[in-house]
Amino acid sequence: FVNLTMISYEVMTFLTWAQRRYLGEVQTSEMFMTAGRTIKTGLTASAIVSAWTWAATLLQSSTVAYQYGVSGPFWYASGATIQVLLFAILAIEIKRKAPNAHTFLEIIKIRYGTTAHIVFMIFGLLTNIIVTAMLILGGSAVVTDLTGMSVYAACMLIPIGVTVYVVAGGLKATFLTDYIHTAFIYVIILIFGFTVYAKSDLIGSPSKMFQLLASAAKLHPVDGNEAGGYLTMSSTGGLIFGIINIVGNFGTVFVDQAYWQRAIAARPSSTVVGYLIGGLCWFAIPFFLATTLGLSGVALESNPLFPTYPSRMAPGDVSAGLVAVNSAVTLLGSGGGVAILILIFMAVTSASSAELIAVSSIITYDIYKSYFKPSATSKQLINFSHIIILVFGLLMGVLGIILKFIGISLGYLYLMMGIIVSPAVFPIFFALTWRKQNVYAAIIACVVGFIAGVGSWLGVAASLYGSITIDSTGSNYPMLAGNLVSLGASCITSIVITLIKPDNFDWNVTKEGLKQLIEEDDKIEIDPSETDEVKLNKAAKIAYYSSIVLTVVLILIWPLPMFFSKYVFSEGFFTGWVAFGMAWAILASIVVIFLPIVESFSGILGMLKGMGGDLTGKKQVPTEEKKADEATA
Image 1 (cartoon, rainbow, N blue to C red):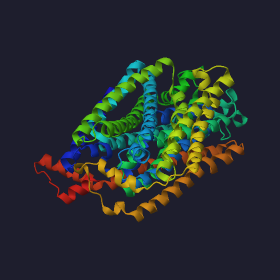
Image 2 (image 1 turned 90 degrees about the horizontal axis):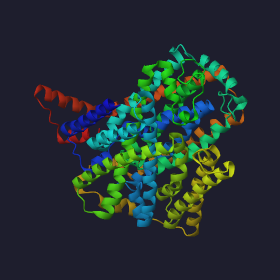
Image 3 (image 1 turned 60 degrees about the vertical axis):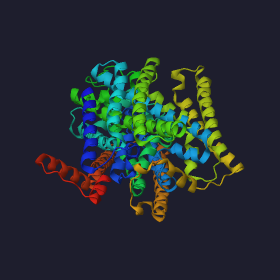
Image 4 (image 1 turned 90 degrees about the vertical axis):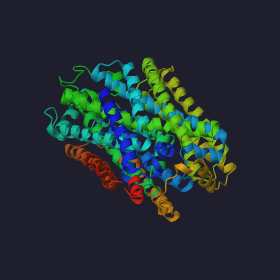
């Protein structure tokens, strides 16, 4: 793990140096935080996939496959894809209405004032803390299980390693390193897929998997699933998880600066398409990996090679996300353990780097520059952001140790996150899409949603189980109640207060007012056609229609008829289901790996020519026009 961290640091350092030497890029605060707002479609999609691929994506998705069967991977994937697709709306709206923003909180402040700014900042930072804690808990559990390292040491090692390489490179170099990590993730997932469904002596085909799952259902029937089987979408537990997943992930996308950061960094012409491609490509990761390793956990649990044989996995280990780990080791021995360790490392470091830069952006621009030093220079902002990254990384390591010590698991945090952060979802969405939402609606909706959600969560736990404990509050029905009330109460409150006293906000205030936050030296020239109002309006229409249609398909048209029909998969249908998942994963990997290369070929060629010139003693000096073109590649 330490070696992988050092390799990532060396890659990050090299990329930063190469961009400076061969592409003429200067690491100003604007470049460090926004990548110059010039990222193209392929790298935008790749960055979204990397930021959204948490430890939970790989571990919790396999957990719900183990618990609910084939419905688990689907509900994990669809329930966490629609938020990225719908975020395409906000991504293009920020280009239309606040093109010079560094954080979503800057927009909140200029529209609603200081009080709202502080309220939403609390929700934003809570989101970053919860997400980072999940990354640390998931990653440390895997590292400890596979290597024997102290779990507390692992909790500190992960954030420290990530902070070192983030400080070295900033946002754009992080995008490039994350691209490499994401490519590895897809390759390893496909290796597991082909092993399980084509090569392994233990399974080796969808037909054998079908038979093993049918046998497992007789030994351990799933309560709430049709006929107690794993081969059905008619799963009450799976549906409840899907609803919790949908609500919770709205909070961790719409309230997470990491996703706004990617929207801000993207070229206007790449924003909508980048988010739509990124969301659809990401769907394949939890869907196919969990259909592979999660179902393998069920199928192989009765095999003597399974680590816990002859017993089933302990509930604590299941909640910690070790289903995928045990499956990988059973299938490929120590090689499987190494593969899953690399997989988790790539996911944890990529997503953690996104969270670190997000927190750094918020504290640097929304606290330090807004309230303490409005006249801060670019160099001062970079130095301050470096300090914040290091401090936040250390503090999150300590928080991971505390959570582990008191018994909070990855699964618990994943189900609980929506209760805490989703009250801010609709007020933020309306802040960029509804000129009538007033300041009182925005603030009160957050407070009411939070109080009502937490109260419902704890109240249902106490009512159903007679006490408030980690076990009772971690059960499905309390989590479901808390998540739904947090999101719903906030939405209703915002709409009602707004209708009582509607505002009539002028979007030119955010469009023009935020320009003064950018220093002259930081400005990067952008093709005027990129900011053409007609093109931006057309992109907004595409974002609204396409994201809404895809959302309806993924959470209504596709799954609900299968749920209500109580259909149990036949062997042929299951084979087609697996083939579909594998095809989606292959196509997604091709897009994410090769599209950034094709789009940035001129920049890559420029760097290679520069390196060749250095090696031969004939350095290539690009013209100003060529340098500007390569700098945006």
